[in-house]
Image 1 (cartoon, rainbow, N blue to C red):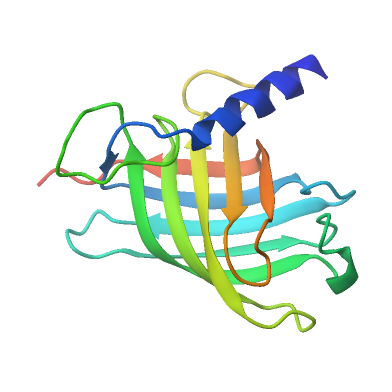
Image 2 (image 1 turned 60 degrees about the horizontal axis):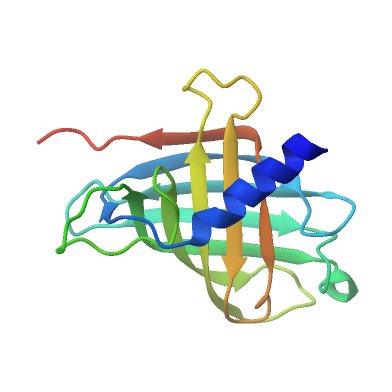
Length: 173
């Protein structure tokens, strides 16, 4: 229990402003604990800003038992990526400021509900961390998903990912 609490505390701190955003790519998916409910939250994502001036990607999320959304059978959405950055500690006044912690990939998205009981769309942010290739066998990946507008406004989920989070460097020019 104390290890899980430490992980959640560390991940929640990831929404504190970090360094500057650099182009990057993140892919993966999996499950994490529901945002307060009894089931799992399932998601997939692909976000890429390696091609200068182009951002591409999408995200799917389904959290069927999320608290505050039980009466509509949870949160279910498909999103398009608006921007994505690798958050580094490097100071670059021309780069955007990250909302995620250093080492995380920030993904800003616009979503549309795919839940037939909830119409509409809005915006959110995901902070995705890849810890699986750094020798830590217990923590492979982490995610923070926060929705700020639309029918799922107020949805917030943080935790470790059972699945795969892969951060990729952009090819050298």
